[in-house]
Length: 235
Image 1: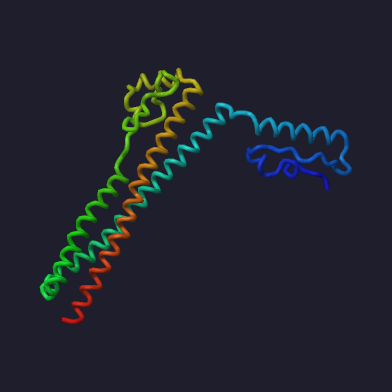
Image 2: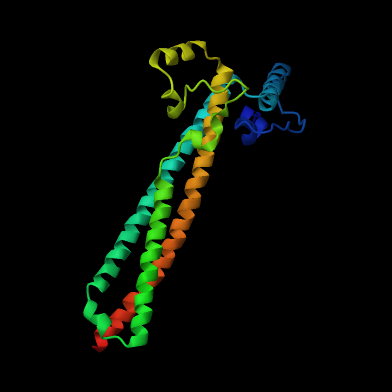
C-alpha cells in the first residue's frame, strides 16, 4: 500500500506543528517520479511549519483569539448571574426564618445571642459577596488598563475596539480605515487580545471570591435552618 501524505507527515505537521521528517524508508513499488513528488510535498510541509505566519494568517489567528476571549467574558458573566440566583434562593430561606420571630424568643439567652450573631454575619457576608458579583459584572474599559499607550510608538488608530472608535468622528474614522496598513491592524488586534486577557483575569478573580463566599453562605444558612427546625419541633 503506498504511503500517503497524511502517513508521511503525521497529524502534528498537518495541524501546523513542528514537522519531523520520517525515516528514509523506501516505499515499495514507488516510481522515481512519485518519489520526487513525495519529497517535494515533505519539503513544502517542512517550510510551512517553520515559517512565520503571514499578515492575513496572523490576522485570522488574532481574531480567533479575540472571539474566544469574548466568549469567555460572556461565560464569566453567566457564572456570576447563576451565583446571584443561588444566593437569592438562600436569602429567601433565611428571610423565611426571620419572619418567624417567635422562634427566636423561645431560644435560651446564649443560643439566642449565637443565632443573632449568625444572622448579622450572614447579612454582612451577603453584602460582601454581592459586591464581588458586581465587580465581576461591571463594565471594564480599555483606558483603565493603561493600554492606550499604543503600539510601535505611534499609538493605535482605534479601528477595532469600541472605546477607541467612539473617540473618532465619522469622517476621521473613514480616513483612518483608508490609510491603515495590515501590520497596524495586527498590532491593534494584539492590544485588544491582551486587554481581553487582563479583563478575563479580573473577572475570574472576582468570580472565585464570589463562589467561595457562596459556599460559606450555604453553610451558614444550613446551620440556621437546622437550629430553627430543632426549635420548631421541640416547641
